[in-house]
Amino acid sequence: MRNWQVTAWVALFAMSLTAVHAEEKKFDREKILGKWTYQAGQKSGIASEIEALQKSRVTITKETITLEDDNNKFVIKYTIDTSKTPAVIDMEITESPFGAGAKAIGIIALDGETLKICYAPMGEKAPEKFETKEGSSTHMFMLKRAK
Image 1 (cartoon, rainbow, N blue to C red):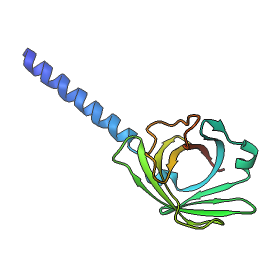
Image 2 (cartoon, rainbow, N blue to C red):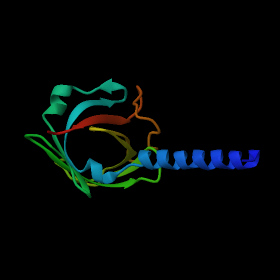
Image 3 (tube, helix red, strand yellow):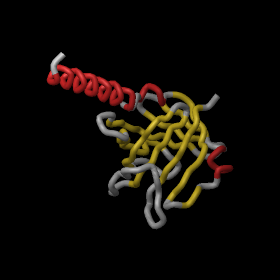
């Protein structure tokens, strides 16, 4: 083989590996459907009380995220843009004890059985990383698939 042929084969092989790797990382919204439990949460850089979070149940369908505990129920309509990495999630509360209409935008990622959601309330820019900082109004939650 000539040098240019070797170079071409190496380039094609590298491009195919990159395409396979990109496909593996693409967010699969079907994999988030089901029941989840909270593992951790933060708001403005401050950890949420895990005992309170663990009393809540989370159910995700193709169109809604439902958060319930013994006293409250929140239904959130959502869409996910999987063309971005991490995937972008737009949410709107459609049912809650406090009324409907509140919106948020964020990012979402699934790593095995762990689902991460990080979002900013209505009117703010979506976070770019899965983190919250003191003074921000960003929220972040880690969920595990319920058994």
